[in-house]
Length: 247
Image (tube, rainbow, N blue to C red; front, side, top):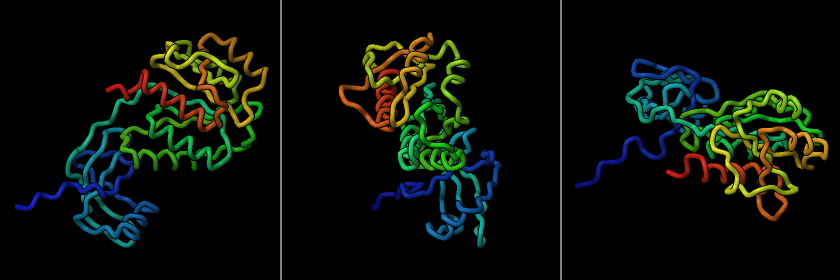
């Protein structure tokens, strides 16, 4: 007797929708997403897809109606509730476009709760395009199976970040001049990681950081890491020690 095919298939498209989902919902997908589903994936009535809304979790749906530029979806069942994301923020100095995209993508996949761009004295990126970063973040969530989007905040200058920093949240300062290994630092959630720009932090910024009570210096090994590598290495170490990788 042949085995019953897996349902939904592993190839089922997965999308974020900015519409509340539930048993009685009938979300409509249009725009670029509809173009992708209809023109690239060749979806038709009855085909399955997975949707998540950042509120209620992930749902399995099927195409109820497909017209030239939109699809109406029939919700079949919930597949996952909204996940509980570890309370870790990534505070990062924006870097050049491709590397910045990589930071957003990988930090999202690794499970951070908030992405906070920080403008430092050596930040060379003059403008951060929030819409593009949000698109990268959503695409990463769609790919990795997240049901909760990270919070993406507006860029802030480093002095302002420190001025308004919550006292209960440890700020792990990835200092290229040295610090304690992550395994030796007590930094359970709530916590945040701070990484600098391509040229590193200035002496004035380093002094400002080390004078702030919630700041803890961490070292990321014996080699000098690129800004994007430092961010991902620090997140990975924290997730392995304090996050949701342990279970």
